[in-house]
Length: 239
Image (cartoon, rainbow, N blue to C red; front, side, top):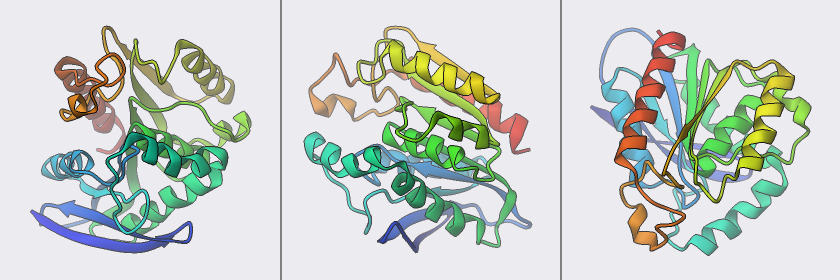
């Protein structure tokens, strides 16, 4: 498998993302992979590698610049505050990855998806709300809210899938309901999958390191089911 660091500028930062693809002929569908709040971790990188093995060109995207990775949850939240306050900054960082990916000769720019985990899922949704040319967007344990006008959702071109733990305290039922209204009012082709007995970070096998099992916990069942849903959506949109 080919791997290289892709460097580009976005939101005034130097982004250092990791590109993966299997050598082959002809342009292929591309997938952006946005990481959890801590930054570009092995979790996002391993998902990009998995997608590359499935035949996609996958870019595991930098979040904080210079491939910065922080381990402290409060520090990560602090880094995200300006992005929550101003969705245009989130969209700029996401768009930087999109432009870098679609500039590659290996990628069919007309067949691109964006996925993300935790805040990375929020990035995927904000990129879609910006009107980016995406075929599909998938958010895993993804924050669903936005500080941007709800009417921005009318610009979404992608089919949207969000996979959420039904007991995730970070994405309460009220936020899910607001997102549902936003998607419905904008006429988006969307799905929301809820997983019972499941909280935040259910795709991350390292979640137990946080010592917060009531809020952050890996679920092999929800992980497998949500990834199967991604594959089904990609089969419909990126083939």
